[in-house]
Length: 195
Image (cartoon, rainbow, N blue to C red; front, top):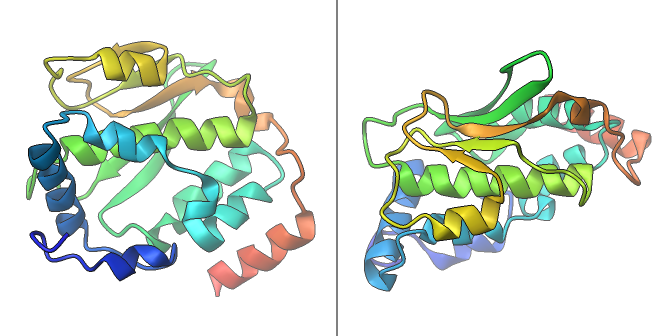
């Protein structure tokens, strides 16, 4: 953390922001220091909605998965100013939850992309329940030398050097109601975030 100029206290509150380039440098330093080429996957695998603070609460209380992902697209900038989530149809029956980095030419985004895609899978599984499964995960990065960790984490087809990075899943999941969602909490948090 000291090497890349990040203070540990910043990670103590899920509503704190971290400079995007510093985060990319941190993940790259972690790969160098550990020798673990899939370090970003390990970070993403630890994700839970609670780590998104108020945005996570909004998603957890949305009426369905589609509304939750719409809220993610509108409000992730509370945490992330270097990229944006995108939700696009890739066929009549499948959609892609992607992560579009604004300044990918400024630094290597491979580890950030790995982290974001692992987080997207965890987020979708938390919202949809344990029956949810990705159909394919696209990476815009080059195929790593070893992909066993990728296969183990995602459990579906993997495509590297793809035009758009993202998690492809059945579109029907967008209508899935979110268990234990509270409409009053959702309305209150939506109003707070909009303000």
